[in-house]
Amino acid sequence: MLVGRAEFLGVLARLTTESRLAFDVETTGLRPYQDSQLFSLVVATQSDVFYFNFLPYEDLDLEYVLPREWLSEFQVVFGNRDAVYFAHNAKFDLAMLSREGIEVLGTVHCTEAMARLLGNVELTYTLDACVTRLALATNTVISKDHTVEWYINKYDLWAWEQEPGKAARKKNKFFAKVPVDIMAPYARRDGEITMRLGEWQEDEFLLQASTVPPNLPSILALADNERRLTKTLFKMERVGVAIDKAYCEEAIKYEEARAEKATSDFKSLTGQDLVDSGKALKGVFAQYGFEVPNTEKGNPSVTDEFLARTPSPVSQIVQTYRDATKRVNTYFRSFVWLVGADGAVHCNFRQGGTATGRVSCTNPNIQSAPKEDEGPFKVRRAFIPRPNFFFFAPDYSAMEYRVMLDYAGEDALIERIKAGMDVHQATAELIGTSRKQAKSVNFACLYGAGIEKLADMLGTSLKDARRIRGEYFSKLPRVQNFIKQVVRTAELRGYVYNRMGRRCAFPDPRFSYKAPNYLIQGGCADVVKLAMNRIDDFLINRKSRMLLQIHDEILFEVHESERHICPELIAIMEQAYTPKSLPMQVVGKESGVSWGDVADA
Image (cartoon, helix red, strand yellow):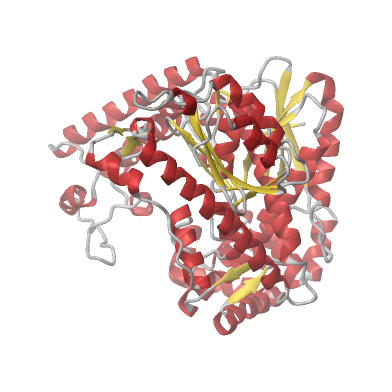
Protein backbone atom coordinates (compact mmCIF):
# COMPACT_ATOMS: atom_id res chain seq x y z
CA MET A 1 0.00 0.00 0.00
CA LEU A 2 1.28 3.46 -0.96
CA VAL A 3 0.23 5.52 2.05
CA GLY A 4 -1.37 8.88 1.33
CA ARG A 5 -1.79 11.88 3.56
CA ALA A 6 -5.42 11.09 4.33
CA GLU A 7 -4.75 7.63 5.77
CA PHE A 8 -1.32 8.39 7.27
CA LEU A 9 -2.37 8.76 10.91
CA GLY A 10 -4.69 5.78 10.71
CA VAL A 11 -1.94 3.53 9.37
CA LEU A 12 0.43 4.70 12.10
CA ALA A 13 -2.19 3.99 14.73
CA ARG A 14 -2.56 0.46 13.41
CA LEU A 15 1.20 -0.12 13.35
CA THR A 16 1.47 0.86 17.03
CA THR A 17 -0.67 -2.17 17.91
CA GLU A 18 1.74 -4.61 16.27
CA SER A 19 4.36 -6.45 18.31
CA ARG A 20 6.37 -7.63 15.31
CA LEU A 21 7.33 -5.35 12.43
CA ALA A 22 9.85 -5.37 9.58
CA PHE A 23 11.23 -2.13 8.22
CA ASP A 24 13.50 -0.86 5.47
CA VAL A 25 14.59 2.56 4.28
CA GLU A 26 15.28 3.75 0.74
CA THR A 27 18.00 6.37 0.54
CA THR A 28 19.93 8.56 -1.87
CA GLY A 29 23.21 6.82 -0.97
CA LEU A 30 25.00 4.52 1.43
CA ARG A 31 26.71 7.08 3.68
CA PRO A 32 24.41 7.63 6.64
CA TYR A 33 26.91 9.85 8.45
CA GLN A 34 27.78 12.00 5.44
CA ASP A 35 25.44 13.08 2.64
CA SER A 36 22.83 10.32 2.22
CA GLN A 37 19.16 11.11 2.77
CA LEU A 38 16.13 8.93 3.46
CA PHE A 39 13.41 9.34 0.83
CA SER A 40 11.03 6.53 1.72
CA LEU A 41 10.25 4.08 4.49
CA VAL A 42 8.67 0.64 4.34
CA VAL A 43 7.01 -0.98 7.35
CA ALA A 44 5.64 -4.52 7.14
CA THR A 45 3.35 -6.47 9.44
CA GLN A 46 2.61 -10.18 9.17
CA SER A 47 -0.25 -9.40 6.75
CA ASP A 48 0.39 -5.97 5.16
CA VAL A 49 3.20 -3.82 3.83
CA PHE A 50 3.10 -0.01 3.85
CA TYR A 51 5.21 2.32 1.71
CA PHE A 52 5.67 5.88 2.97
CA ASN A 53 7.06 8.22 0.31
CA PHE A 54 8.72 11.57 1.06
CA LEU A 55 10.15 12.28 -2.41
CA PRO A 56 8.31 14.82 -4.64
CA TYR A 57 8.16 12.93 -7.94
CA GLU A 58 7.05 15.17 -10.82
CA ASP A 59 4.18 12.93 -11.94
CA LEU A 60 2.97 11.85 -8.49
CA ASP A 61 -0.17 13.24 -6.89
CA LEU A 62 0.75 15.45 -3.93
CA GLU A 63 -1.49 13.25 -1.80
CA TYR A 64 1.23 10.59 -1.89
CA VAL A 65 4.14 12.92 -1.15
CA LEU A 66 4.27 13.02 2.62
CA PRO A 67 5.70 16.14 4.28
CA ARG A 68 9.20 15.42 5.56
CA GLU A 69 8.38 16.78 8.99
CA TRP A 70 5.89 13.92 9.38
CA LEU A 71 8.83 11.54 9.78
CA SER A 72 8.95 12.45 13.47
CA GLU A 73 5.52 10.84 13.88
CA PHE A 74 7.11 7.41 13.36
CA GLN A 75 8.55 7.47 16.86
CA VAL A 76 5.25 6.03 18.09
CA VAL A 77 5.75 3.07 15.70
CA PHE A 78 9.32 2.39 16.79
CA GLY A 79 8.85 3.29 20.45
CA ASN A 80 7.43 -0.03 21.67
CA ARG A 81 10.11 -1.52 23.93
CA ASP A 82 8.33 -4.88 23.89
CA ALA A 83 8.19 -5.17 20.09
CA VAL A 84 10.58 -7.01 17.75
CA TYR A 85 11.76 -5.09 14.68
CA PHE A 86 13.22 -7.06 11.77
CA ALA A 87 15.63 -5.41 9.31
CA HIS A 88 18.37 -6.64 6.99
CA ASN A 89 21.69 -4.86 7.62
CA ALA A 90 19.78 -3.19 10.42
CA LYS A 91 22.46 -0.76 11.59
CA PHE A 92 22.23 1.17 8.32
CA ASP A 93 18.47 1.58 8.73
CA LEU A 94 18.92 2.55 12.38
CA ALA A 95 21.41 5.22 11.35
CA MET A 96 19.10 6.71 8.72
CA LEU A 97 16.15 6.74 11.13
CA SER A 98 18.33 8.29 13.81
CA ARG A 99 19.19 11.16 11.47
CA GLU A 100 15.46 11.90 11.38
CA GLY A 101 15.22 11.82 15.18
CA ILE A 102 13.69 8.33 15.34
CA GLU A 103 15.01 5.82 17.87
CA VAL A 104 14.06 2.15 17.71
CA LEU A 105 13.42 1.24 21.34
CA GLY A 106 12.40 -2.41 21.00
CA THR A 107 14.44 -5.50 20.11
CA VAL A 108 16.21 -5.23 16.75
CA HIS A 109 16.61 -8.50 14.87
CA CYS A 110 19.14 -8.02 12.06
CA THR A 111 18.34 -10.78 9.59
CA GLU A 112 21.82 -10.49 8.06
CA ALA A 113 23.64 -11.03 11.37
CA MET A 114 21.25 -13.78 12.44
CA ALA A 115 21.76 -15.60 9.14
CA ARG A 116 25.48 -15.85 9.89
CA LEU A 117 24.74 -17.21 13.36
CA LEU A 118 22.45 -19.88 11.91
CA GLY A 119 24.92 -20.95 9.25
CA ASN A 120 28.50 -19.72 9.23
CA VAL A 121 29.79 -21.06 5.89
CA GLU A 122 27.57 -19.43 3.26
CA LEU A 123 29.29 -17.42 0.54
CA THR A 124 27.08 -14.38 0.94
CA TYR A 125 24.47 -13.03 3.35
CA THR A 126 22.68 -10.50 1.17
CA LEU A 127 18.91 -10.31 1.52
CA ASP A 128 18.58 -11.96 -1.88
CA ALA A 129 20.82 -14.89 -0.89
CA CYS A 130 19.17 -15.35 2.50
CA VAL A 131 15.68 -15.40 1.02
CA THR A 132 16.78 -17.86 -1.66
CA ARG A 133 17.96 -20.20 1.09
CA LEU A 134 14.68 -19.66 2.94
CA ALA A 135 12.72 -20.66 -0.17
CA LEU A 136 14.78 -23.83 -0.58
CA ALA A 137 14.52 -24.75 3.11
CA THR A 138 10.74 -24.29 3.25
CA ASN A 139 9.93 -25.36 -0.32
CA THR A 140 8.04 -22.12 -0.92
CA VAL A 141 8.01 -19.58 -3.73
CA ILE A 142 9.54 -16.40 -2.35
CA SER A 143 12.13 -14.12 -3.92
CA LYS A 144 13.46 -10.60 -4.03
CA ASP A 145 12.22 -8.12 -6.62
CA HIS A 146 15.03 -7.14 -9.04
CA THR A 147 13.09 -4.61 -11.11
CA VAL A 148 14.83 -1.58 -9.62
CA GLU A 149 18.29 -2.98 -10.36
CA TRP A 150 17.16 -3.70 -13.92
CA TYR A 151 15.83 -0.15 -14.31
CA ILE A 152 18.99 1.46 -12.93
CA ASN A 153 21.18 -0.51 -15.33
CA LYS A 154 18.92 0.04 -18.34
CA TYR A 155 18.80 3.80 -17.91
CA ASP A 156 22.36 4.25 -16.58
CA LEU A 157 21.23 5.67 -13.26
CA TRP A 158 24.61 5.19 -11.65
CA ALA A 159 28.18 6.48 -11.64
CA TRP A 160 31.52 4.90 -10.84
CA GLU A 161 32.96 5.72 -7.44
CA GLN A 162 36.59 5.12 -6.52
CA GLU A 163 37.23 4.80 -2.82
CA PRO A 164 40.79 5.41 -1.59
CA GLY A 165 42.62 2.23 -0.70
CA LYS A 166 40.43 -0.02 -2.81
CA ALA A 167 41.50 -1.23 -6.24
CA ALA A 168 38.01 -1.97 -7.54
CA ARG A 169 35.53 0.77 -8.35
CA LYS A 170 31.94 0.40 -7.26
CA LYS A 171 28.67 1.64 -8.68
CA ASN A 172 27.00 4.53 -6.92
CA LYS A 173 23.36 3.85 -7.76
CA PHE A 174 20.76 6.62 -7.92
CA PHE A 175 17.71 4.96 -6.36
CA ALA A 176 15.93 8.28 -5.93
CA LYS A 177 15.71 8.60 -9.73
CA VAL A 178 13.72 5.39 -10.11
CA PRO A 179 9.98 6.08 -10.72
CA VAL A 180 7.77 5.50 -7.70
CA ASP A 181 5.61 2.93 -9.52
CA ILE A 182 8.74 0.75 -9.75
CA MET A 183 10.34 1.70 -6.45
CA ALA A 184 7.31 1.20 -4.24
CA PRO A 185 6.58 -2.46 -5.20
CA TYR A 186 10.30 -3.25 -4.99
CA ALA A 187 10.57 -1.79 -1.50
CA ARG A 188 7.33 -3.41 -0.31
CA ARG A 189 8.66 -6.78 -1.41
CA ASP A 190 11.82 -6.19 0.64
CA GLY A 191 9.67 -5.44 3.69
CA GLU A 192 7.55 -8.55 3.14
CA ILE A 193 10.46 -10.96 2.69
CA THR A 194 12.38 -9.46 5.60
CA MET A 195 9.41 -10.18 7.86
CA ARG A 196 9.19 -13.76 6.61
CA LEU A 197 12.94 -14.25 6.87
CA GLY A 198 13.09 -12.95 10.44
CA GLU A 199 10.25 -15.13 11.67
CA TRP A 200 11.70 -18.20 9.94
CA GLN A 201 15.05 -17.50 11.60
CA GLU A 202 13.37 -17.42 15.00
CA ASP A 203 11.87 -20.83 14.29
CA GLU A 204 15.27 -22.15 13.19
CA PHE A 205 16.87 -20.97 16.43
CA LEU A 206 14.25 -22.90 18.38
CA LEU A 207 14.96 -25.97 16.26
CA GLN A 208 18.72 -25.68 16.76
CA ALA A 209 18.22 -25.15 20.50
CA SER A 210 16.50 -28.52 20.71
CA THR A 211 19.61 -30.27 19.32
CA VAL A 212 22.32 -28.57 21.41
CA PRO A 213 24.04 -30.90 23.91
CA PRO A 214 22.72 -30.35 27.46
CA ASN A 215 26.16 -29.32 28.76
CA LEU A 216 26.25 -26.27 26.48
CA PRO A 217 24.37 -22.95 26.68
CA SER A 218 21.33 -22.65 24.47
CA ILE A 219 21.82 -20.94 21.14
CA LEU A 220 18.80 -18.85 22.13
CA ALA A 221 20.93 -17.01 24.70
CA LEU A 222 23.58 -16.44 22.05
CA ALA A 223 20.96 -15.15 19.60
CA ASP A 224 19.62 -12.76 22.24
CA ASN A 225 23.13 -11.45 22.82
CA GLU A 226 23.63 -10.96 19.07
CA ARG A 227 20.34 -9.09 18.77
CA ARG A 228 21.35 -6.89 21.66
CA LEU A 229 24.76 -6.33 20.04
CA THR A 230 23.21 -4.75 16.94
CA LYS A 231 22.19 -1.73 18.98
CA THR A 232 25.48 -1.65 20.87
CA LEU A 233 27.46 -1.52 17.63
CA PHE A 234 25.08 1.03 16.15
CA LYS A 235 25.64 3.37 19.09
CA MET A 236 29.40 3.04 18.67
CA GLU A 237 29.15 3.81 14.97
CA ARG A 238 26.93 6.80 15.58
CA VAL A 239 29.40 8.36 18.02
CA GLY A 240 32.38 7.63 15.74
CA VAL A 241 35.97 8.43 16.53
CA ALA A 242 37.49 11.85 15.92
CA ILE A 243 40.22 12.23 13.30
CA ASP A 244 43.14 14.65 13.24
CA LYS A 245 42.62 15.69 9.62
CA ALA A 246 45.69 17.95 9.48
CA TYR A 247 47.86 15.08 10.76
CA CYS A 248 46.42 12.78 8.06
CA GLU A 249 47.14 15.31 5.33
CA GLU A 250 50.75 15.66 6.46
CA ALA A 251 51.04 11.88 6.58
CA ILE A 252 49.72 11.64 3.02
CA LYS A 253 52.45 13.98 1.79
CA TYR A 254 55.13 12.03 3.62
CA GLU A 255 54.00 8.60 2.42
CA GLU A 256 53.53 9.79 -1.17
CA ALA A 257 57.12 11.05 -1.12
CA ARG A 258 58.28 7.63 0.14
CA ALA A 259 56.39 5.90 -2.66
CA GLU A 260 57.84 8.27 -5.27
CA LYS A 261 61.36 7.68 -3.98
CA ALA A 262 60.86 3.90 -4.07
CA THR A 263 59.65 4.20 -7.66
CA SER A 264 62.72 6.27 -8.57
CA ASP A 265 65.08 3.88 -6.78
CA PHE A 266 63.56 0.92 -8.59
CA LYS A 267 64.07 2.63 -11.96
CA SER A 268 67.68 3.50 -11.12
CA LEU A 269 68.45 -0.03 -9.96
CA THR A 270 66.66 -2.07 -12.62
CA GLY A 271 66.22 0.31 -15.54
CA GLN A 272 62.48 -0.49 -15.52
CA ASP A 273 59.36 1.22 -14.25
CA LEU A 274 57.98 -0.22 -11.02
CA VAL A 275 54.80 -2.15 -11.78
CA ASP A 276 53.64 -3.97 -8.67
CA SER A 277 52.40 -7.21 -10.16
CA GLY A 278 53.71 -10.76 -10.08
CA LYS A 279 54.00 -10.90 -13.86
CA ALA A 280 56.02 -7.65 -14.07
CA LEU A 281 58.29 -8.42 -11.10
CA LYS A 282 59.03 -12.02 -12.04
CA GLY A 283 61.51 -11.04 -14.73
CA VAL A 284 63.19 -8.46 -12.50
CA PHE A 285 63.85 -10.98 -9.73
CA ALA A 286 65.04 -13.52 -12.29
CA GLN A 287 67.81 -11.09 -13.27
CA TYR A 288 69.07 -11.27 -9.70
CA GLY A 289 68.84 -15.06 -9.53
CA PHE A 290 65.59 -15.37 -7.58
CA GLU A 291 62.63 -17.46 -8.77
CA VAL A 292 59.18 -16.08 -8.08
CA PRO A 293 56.72 -18.81 -6.98
CA ASN A 294 53.42 -19.40 -8.75
CA THR A 295 49.90 -19.64 -7.38
CA GLU A 296 47.87 -22.83 -7.70
CA LYS A 297 46.58 -21.45 -11.01
CA GLY A 298 50.13 -20.98 -12.28
CA ASN A 299 50.36 -17.20 -11.98
CA PRO A 300 53.54 -15.60 -10.57
CA SER A 301 52.97 -14.24 -7.06
CA VAL A 302 55.28 -11.80 -5.28
CA THR A 303 53.88 -12.00 -1.77
CA ASP A 304 55.06 -10.04 1.25
CA GLU A 305 56.45 -13.31 2.64
CA PHE A 306 58.51 -13.81 -0.53
CA LEU A 307 59.89 -10.28 -0.29
CA ALA A 308 60.76 -10.72 3.40
CA ARG A 309 62.87 -13.81 2.79
CA THR A 310 64.50 -12.70 -0.48
CA PRO A 311 67.83 -10.90 0.20
CA SER A 312 67.77 -8.41 -2.64
CA PRO A 313 67.68 -4.59 -2.81
CA VAL A 314 64.73 -5.02 -5.18
CA SER A 315 62.79 -6.67 -2.36
CA GLN A 316 63.47 -3.79 -0.01
CA ILE A 317 62.36 -1.22 -2.58
CA VAL A 318 59.13 -3.06 -3.38
CA GLN A 319 58.42 -3.50 0.34
CA THR A 320 58.90 0.23 0.91
CA TYR A 321 56.65 1.05 -2.04
CA ARG A 322 53.91 -1.27 -0.83
CA ASP A 323 54.12 -0.02 2.73
CA ALA A 324 53.93 3.63 1.67
CA THR A 325 51.05 3.16 -0.79
CA LYS A 326 49.08 1.08 1.71
CA ARG A 327 49.52 3.64 4.46
CA VAL A 328 48.57 6.56 2.24
CA ASN A 329 45.54 4.90 0.62
CA THR A 330 44.18 2.27 3.01
CA TYR A 331 44.63 4.52 6.02
CA PHE A 332 45.30 8.25 5.84
CA ARG A 333 43.57 9.15 2.55
CA SER A 334 40.67 6.84 3.41
CA PHE A 335 40.26 8.52 6.80
CA VAL A 336 40.08 11.97 5.19
CA TRP A 337 37.66 10.77 2.53
CA LEU A 338 35.32 9.15 5.07
CA VAL A 339 35.34 11.83 7.76
CA GLY A 340 31.92 13.31 8.49
CA ALA A 341 30.88 16.88 9.14
CA ASP A 342 31.42 16.21 12.85
CA GLY A 343 35.14 15.55 12.28
CA ALA A 344 34.79 11.82 13.01
CA VAL A 345 34.83 8.62 11.00
CA HIS A 346 31.89 6.31 11.52
CA CYS A 347 33.05 2.85 10.49
CA ASN A 348 30.76 -0.07 9.76
CA PHE A 349 31.13 -2.93 12.23
CA ARG A 350 30.04 -6.06 10.38
CA GLN A 351 28.40 -8.15 13.07
CA GLY A 352 28.23 -11.23 10.86
CA GLY A 353 31.40 -10.44 8.97
CA THR A 354 33.39 -13.61 9.66
CA ALA A 355 32.81 -17.36 9.74
CA THR A 356 34.18 -17.66 13.29
CA GLY A 357 31.83 -15.05 14.78
CA ARG A 358 34.38 -12.26 15.05
CA VAL A 359 33.18 -8.74 14.28
CA SER A 360 34.87 -7.27 11.20
CA CYS A 361 35.07 -3.64 10.16
CA THR A 362 34.80 -1.61 6.93
CA ASN A 363 34.75 1.99 5.74
CA PRO A 364 37.36 2.31 7.13
CA ASN A 365 38.76 -0.96 8.44
CA ILE A 366 40.03 0.49 11.69
CA GLN A 367 40.67 -3.00 13.06
CA SER A 368 43.60 -3.32 10.63
CA ALA A 369 45.33 -0.17 11.91
CA PRO A 370 48.76 -1.45 13.04
CA LYS A 371 49.55 -1.41 16.74
CA GLU A 372 53.23 -0.87 16.10
CA ASP A 373 54.53 0.80 12.94
CA GLU A 374 57.66 2.68 12.03
CA GLY A 375 58.17 6.20 10.77
CA PRO A 376 57.08 9.63 11.99
CA PHE A 377 53.39 9.15 11.15
CA LYS A 378 51.85 6.33 13.18
CA VAL A 379 48.45 5.27 11.84
CA ARG A 380 46.76 5.12 15.24
CA ARG A 381 47.87 8.68 16.03
CA ALA A 382 45.31 9.85 13.46
CA PHE A 383 42.60 9.06 16.05
CA ILE A 384 42.25 11.63 18.81
CA PRO A 385 39.96 12.05 21.84
CA ARG A 386 37.47 14.89 21.87
CA PRO A 387 37.89 17.80 24.32
CA ASN A 388 37.48 16.80 27.99
CA PHE A 389 37.85 13.11 27.14
CA PHE A 390 40.77 10.68 27.10
CA PHE A 391 41.22 7.33 25.43
CA PHE A 392 41.09 4.21 27.56
CA ALA A 393 42.06 0.99 25.78
CA PRO A 394 41.66 -2.21 27.85
CA ASP A 395 42.91 -5.31 26.05
CA TYR A 396 42.48 -9.00 26.86
CA SER A 397 45.94 -10.44 27.49
CA ALA A 398 46.73 -13.49 25.28
CA MET A 399 43.02 -14.19 25.19
CA GLU A 400 42.93 -16.95 22.60
CA TYR A 401 45.83 -18.85 24.09
CA ARG A 402 44.34 -18.62 27.60
CA VAL A 403 41.11 -20.09 26.25
CA MET A 404 43.02 -22.88 24.51
CA LEU A 405 44.85 -23.80 27.71
CA ASP A 406 41.60 -23.64 29.65
CA TYR A 407 39.93 -25.97 27.15
CA ALA A 408 42.90 -28.36 27.19
CA GLY A 409 43.38 -28.31 30.96
CA GLU A 410 47.16 -27.84 30.92
CA ASP A 411 47.22 -27.42 34.69
CA ALA A 412 50.98 -27.04 35.21
CA LEU A 413 51.26 -24.17 32.73
CA ILE A 414 48.00 -22.68 33.95
CA GLU A 415 49.35 -22.49 37.50
CA ARG A 416 52.44 -20.59 36.30
CA ILE A 417 50.24 -18.10 34.46
CA LYS A 418 47.90 -17.68 37.43
CA ALA A 419 50.95 -16.96 39.55
CA GLY A 420 51.60 -13.91 37.34
CA MET A 421 53.88 -15.18 34.58
CA ASP A 422 53.42 -13.90 31.03
CA VAL A 423 51.64 -16.53 28.93
CA HIS A 424 54.17 -16.75 26.11
CA GLN A 425 57.17 -16.46 28.45
CA ALA A 426 55.81 -19.32 30.53
CA THR A 427 55.51 -21.40 27.37
CA ALA A 428 59.04 -20.44 26.29
CA GLU A 429 60.54 -21.57 29.58
CA LEU A 430 58.61 -24.82 29.41
CA ILE A 431 59.84 -25.77 25.92
CA GLY A 432 63.28 -24.16 26.12
CA THR A 433 63.00 -21.50 23.43
CA SER A 434 62.63 -17.73 23.09
CA ARG A 435 59.41 -15.92 23.93
CA LYS A 436 59.06 -14.83 20.30
CA GLN A 437 59.32 -18.41 19.06
CA ALA A 438 56.96 -19.68 21.76
CA LYS A 439 54.40 -17.07 20.74
CA SER A 440 54.72 -18.15 17.09
CA VAL A 441 54.16 -21.82 17.99
CA ASN A 442 51.19 -20.90 20.17
CA PHE A 443 49.46 -19.11 17.33
CA ALA A 444 50.47 -21.72 14.77
CA CYS A 445 48.56 -24.25 16.88
CA LEU A 446 45.56 -21.95 17.12
CA TYR A 447 45.42 -21.35 13.38
CA GLY A 448 46.22 -24.88 12.24
CA ALA A 449 49.42 -23.82 10.48
CA GLY A 450 51.44 -26.48 8.65
CA ILE A 451 55.13 -27.06 9.17
CA GLU A 452 56.16 -24.82 6.25
CA LYS A 453 54.11 -21.94 7.58
CA LEU A 454 55.53 -22.50 11.06
CA ALA A 455 59.07 -22.42 9.65
CA ASP A 456 58.27 -19.06 8.02
CA MET A 457 56.83 -17.75 11.28
CA LEU A 458 59.90 -18.89 13.23
CA GLY A 459 62.41 -17.87 10.59
CA THR A 460 64.00 -21.32 10.76
CA SER A 461 64.49 -24.41 8.61
CA LEU A 462 61.82 -27.09 8.29
CA LYS A 463 63.96 -29.38 10.44
CA ASP A 464 64.18 -26.87 13.29
CA ALA A 465 60.47 -26.07 13.00
CA ARG A 466 59.63 -29.78 13.38
CA ARG A 467 61.93 -30.05 16.38
CA ILE A 468 60.42 -27.03 18.14
CA ARG A 469 56.87 -28.17 17.45
CA GLY A 470 57.73 -31.66 18.69
CA GLU A 471 59.14 -30.23 21.91
CA TYR A 472 56.05 -28.05 22.29
CA PHE A 473 53.64 -30.98 22.08
CA SER A 474 55.82 -33.22 24.24
CA LYS A 475 55.61 -30.64 27.05
CA LEU A 476 51.95 -29.75 26.35
CA PRO A 477 50.34 -33.11 25.49
CA ARG A 478 46.87 -31.96 26.55
CA VAL A 479 46.99 -29.15 24.00
CA GLN A 480 47.93 -31.65 21.32
CA ASN A 481 45.13 -33.98 22.40
CA PHE A 482 42.62 -31.11 22.47
CA ILE A 483 43.52 -30.05 18.92
CA LYS A 484 43.29 -33.62 17.62
CA GLN A 485 39.92 -34.17 19.28
CA VAL A 486 38.41 -30.98 17.89
CA VAL A 487 39.66 -31.71 14.36
CA ARG A 488 38.36 -35.28 14.59
CA THR A 489 34.93 -34.10 15.77
CA ALA A 490 34.69 -31.65 12.87
CA GLU A 491 35.66 -34.41 10.43
CA LEU A 492 33.15 -36.95 11.73
CA ARG A 493 30.22 -34.76 12.77
CA GLY A 494 30.63 -31.82 10.38
CA TYR A 495 30.45 -29.14 13.07
CA VAL A 496 31.72 -28.11 16.51
CA TYR A 497 30.21 -26.01 19.29
CA ASN A 498 32.15 -23.37 21.18
CA ARG A 499 31.59 -22.89 24.88
CA MET A 500 29.03 -20.13 24.29
CA GLY A 501 26.87 -22.45 22.15
CA ARG A 502 27.86 -21.17 18.69
CA ARG A 503 27.87 -23.91 16.07
CA CYS A 504 30.63 -23.77 13.46
CA ALA A 505 30.02 -26.01 10.48
CA PHE A 506 32.62 -27.87 8.41
CA PRO A 507 30.72 -29.50 5.55
CA ASP A 508 34.00 -30.30 3.79
CA PRO A 509 36.23 -32.52 6.02
CA ARG A 510 39.34 -31.20 4.24
CA PHE A 511 38.99 -27.97 6.17
CA SER A 512 38.46 -29.55 9.58
CA TYR A 513 41.98 -28.49 10.57
CA LYS A 514 40.50 -25.01 11.04
CA ALA A 515 38.09 -26.22 13.71
CA PRO A 516 40.28 -25.43 16.77
CA ASN A 517 40.69 -21.87 15.51
CA TYR A 518 36.96 -21.48 14.90
CA LEU A 519 36.21 -22.93 18.31
CA ILE A 520 38.63 -20.65 20.16
CA GLN A 521 38.48 -17.47 18.09
CA GLY A 522 34.70 -17.65 17.88
CA GLY A 523 34.43 -18.31 21.60
CA CYS A 524 36.63 -15.33 22.37
CA ALA A 525 34.55 -13.18 20.03
CA ASP A 526 31.38 -14.17 21.84
CA VAL A 527 32.95 -13.29 25.20
CA VAL A 528 33.92 -9.84 23.89
CA LYS A 529 30.40 -9.35 22.50
CA LEU A 530 28.88 -10.27 25.86
CA ALA A 531 31.22 -7.82 27.59
CA MET A 532 30.32 -5.06 25.12
CA ASN A 533 26.60 -5.44 25.80
CA ARG A 534 27.17 -5.37 29.55
CA ILE A 535 29.37 -2.29 29.17
CA ASP A 536 26.74 -0.60 27.01
CA ASP A 537 24.27 -1.06 29.87
CA PHE A 538 26.86 0.17 32.36
CA LEU A 539 27.47 3.37 30.38
CA ILE A 540 23.81 4.40 30.25
CA ASN A 541 23.44 7.93 31.68
CA ARG A 542 27.22 8.39 31.66
CA LYS A 543 29.24 10.77 29.49
CA SER A 544 31.86 8.16 28.61
CA ARG A 545 31.28 5.98 25.55
CA MET A 546 32.54 2.92 23.73
CA LEU A 547 34.08 3.76 20.34
CA LEU A 548 35.83 0.82 18.74
CA GLN A 549 36.20 -2.94 19.03
CA ILE A 550 39.50 -4.26 17.74
CA HIS A 551 39.01 -7.98 18.38
CA ASP A 552 40.43 -8.40 21.92
CA GLU A 553 40.69 -4.65 22.57
CA ILE A 554 37.95 -2.10 23.19
CA LEU A 555 38.60 1.61 22.81
CA PHE A 556 36.69 3.99 25.07
CA GLU A 557 36.41 7.74 25.21
CA VAL A 558 36.23 8.38 28.94
CA HIS A 559 35.16 11.76 30.28
CA GLU A 560 37.67 13.32 32.66
CA SER A 561 35.02 13.46 35.38
CA GLU A 562 34.49 9.68 35.11
CA ARG A 563 38.06 8.41 35.34
CA HIS A 564 36.98 6.23 38.26
CA ILE A 565 35.00 3.89 35.97
CA CYS A 566 38.11 2.50 34.23
CA PRO A 567 38.66 -0.36 36.75
CA GLU A 568 34.96 -1.21 36.48
CA LEU A 569 35.24 -1.50 32.69
CA ILE A 570 38.15 -3.92 33.14
CA ALA A 571 36.17 -5.95 35.67
CA ILE A 572 33.18 -6.27 33.32
CA MET A 573 35.46 -7.49 30.53
CA GLU A 574 37.21 -10.05 32.73
CA GLN A 575 33.97 -11.36 34.24
CA ALA A 576 32.33 -11.93 30.86
CA TYR A 577 34.35 -15.15 30.61
CA THR A 578 33.52 -18.09 32.87
CA PRO A 579 36.69 -20.21 33.15
CA LYS A 580 37.21 -23.80 34.10
CA SER A 581 40.49 -22.87 35.78
CA LEU A 582 42.22 -20.02 33.91
CA PRO A 583 40.48 -16.64 34.13
CA MET A 584 40.90 -13.73 31.76
CA GLN A 585 43.32 -10.88 32.37
CA VAL A 586 42.63 -7.43 30.96
CA VAL A 587 45.29 -4.72 30.82
CA GLY A 588 44.25 -1.08 30.47
CA LYS A 589 46.12 1.67 28.66
CA GLU A 590 45.25 5.34 28.24
CA SER A 591 46.16 8.56 26.48
CA GLY A 592 44.85 12.07 26.29
CA VAL A 593 46.71 12.66 23.01
CA SER A 594 45.89 9.89 20.54
CA TRP A 595 45.15 6.20 20.18
CA GLY A 596 48.71 5.68 19.02
CA ASP A 597 50.03 7.10 22.28
CA VAL A 598 48.16 4.88 24.73
CA ALA A 599 50.39 3.56 27.49
CA ASP A 600 49.95 1.62 30.72
CA ALA A 601 47.47 3.37 32.95
